[in-house]
Image (cartoon, rainbow, N blue to C red; front, side, top):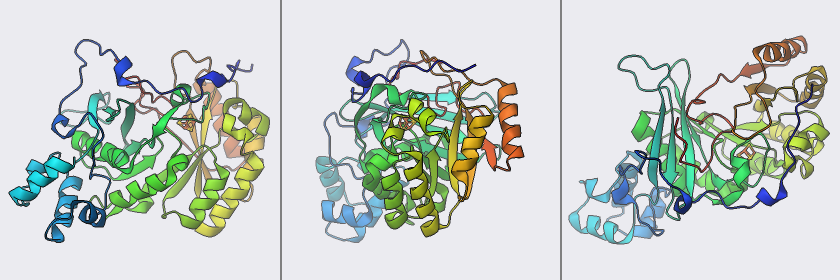
Length: 390
Ligand code: SF4
């Protein structure tokens, strides 16, 4: 039986994401003031997304090495210039008068401690972050069985791509995030949940739509004087902007690439991913082949498994045809429930059947175990609505 797919509503495109001004906190869920001292209501020159040389150019301290000290302090989690005790008082005053560490602040912390043992931190968590212009974004902390932590970071407030299985796509795009706003998410997550080793740029938004800013933020997070997260521990996810896949093959840092494929059949893919009409599967495959020739890296294909839609023999056959000639691993993500959607999560029987077909066709795969679902932080569940209460 086929799932009935909702009509693509063109009016929802480019509708601004939820704004904090429209947000009524539930009782007891008011904004947490943890980093309020660094938050300014109007945009300020935030230093968290700058490299040491950019801080040097912006701040112009009398001694150039001060820029490095400021960079290190911010990346170590100093939320306020007054905490940077290695700096002279005159420089701290000048920084306070003219800059801010970050222009965003944590609005709410969600914890999913389902599997947390005594004395252990929660496995998964989510932060709602209030931006200086009152837009709200979300980012997620995911832990695996080895307790290795991964930050799932947003690159835009909302998203223009409108994938029908995704909550973020419902609200349209508000705007691109700045490098500072991208870096801040990582810093806030570490402060809340401890050291993080991996990053996936897979949260709200289409990362390749904000690519130069993303590269900049990644460079900051990679910097050896700061967090020093290796590029090989960063993954960039796209819904399939083929032209930009070719661009990152030529110009991007050596991050890993994930593509949200979901269907190997053009017509079906178009039904759930409007962008597939612009970048068809043939063009996408060409760009992935080019990427692989240039980078030689295995690509992850995300496959959101939707009950009754992309789970049968023909779907595996079209997937097999698409991956012919590519080195890929297919990441199976049983669809995560989004309120109001007509999609359904596949049963375990349906998942087992699909996986058997993958085995029979010798397709490499992994299955994304449900993570952060309880706090609506799982794949496709992020939104700008902070009024959700688990
Ligand atoms: S799946 Fe990704 S690209 Fe598609 S609407 Fe959601 S956030 Fe945007």
